[in-house]
Structure formats: C-alpha cells, structure tokens
Image (cartoon, rainbow, N blue to C red; front, side, top):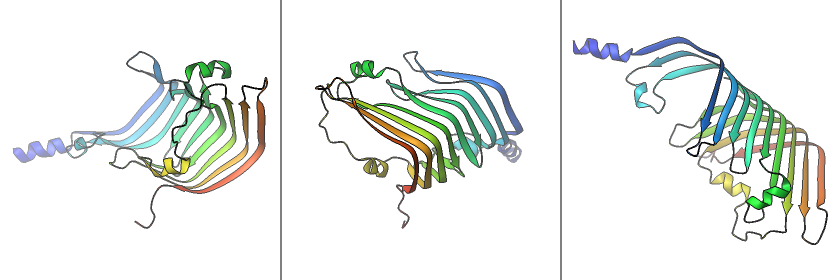
Length: 232
C-alpha cells in the first residue's frame, strides 16, 4: 500500500498543453501604486508536470515554454522612471521587444525638484530589441543570463543634466566594476547597435540655454560583455 501511495504522488499532476489568450494583469505595490501591467497577453506552455521531486524547487513544477506575447507592457523602474513596450515576443530561441521606451515621469524642469543631487534625466527608446539564443536562470543560488548576441535597432538615448543643483561627491564605481560585482552571472558574446543616436545636454547656472552634444547614425559593435571567469 505504501508503494502504491508513493507511486501515485510521484505522478501528482501532468498537463499536456496550457494556453492563455487575451489575458491581462496588473501588479500593485503595498502603497497601491501600479508597478507592472499588461493590457493583453498570450501564453502557451506544454509538458507540464508536478511531483514529489519538483515540489522541492522554487517553482514547484516543470514546464516547457512554447511562446508568449505581451502587449502594452509597463514596469515601474524607479520612483522617477517607467519602462514601456508595445510588444514582447518570447520563444525558446529568442526574445524580441518592439518599441521599448524608458521614460521619466517628469519633465526636465520638474525632474530636478525630485532629486537631491545632480542626476541625469534619461530617456531611452529602442525600435527593436532582440536577444538571441538566450538562457535565463534566476532561481539558482547564482542567477545567470547568457546570450551569444543582442541586437538593438534604432536605439536613441537622450540625457540632460542641470548643474544648478548640488553635485554628489560620493565615490561612484564605473560601469565595469558594477558589472563585475553584479549578483547575476552575465555572458553576452556580442551586442550590436544599429542606426542609433546619443543626445546629451548640460545646463550650467551661468547660462540661459543648455549646451548640447549629438552623435547620430551610430553603428556600434561591443564584444565580450561578461563577468564570468572563463578559466574557472
């Protein structure tokens, strides 16, 4: 009898195909502010099963992602910025994001009223972002993100700094150190940026207008973005 009971628990749940169509979701913080949402999404999973072994994992069941499509996506990035995307397509071989936009909640003039020290007002748009042959694992003790190639097409970065407010003189690590010290193992062989631009403006207290610097029609190739020691 015990063996029969054990065998039945080992085959606790098995689902051949799971599909969601025309779904929507909204997540709120403890202060009732919207943090994440999608007005429409589709999700297809198959080979779903749950048993004694899978119940020990952070996600208590196994599955295979067939496809996902998330429309009108929003994610609060901070108290000052939000992330938006018109469409996100997720398949086992690639993730593709259409019309990505990281946008400040406030205008350039209003932004400085919400910061104690000089901080860049930053607006980023990417017409198309593609992550190829990706591997995510955020449930392990050491989370990881791997991809041989990431492509950003028509990426536009706009930066503005108002130097009329105090500067923070605390030590700030460079981006390379931040990458090395990240809690996520990152290994991206190639990042390709096409037909993109950077627009930087800086407002000095002594000048009525901000000085501007513009780089346009940029094609950039970055290799070996990683914090993984290949010798280990």
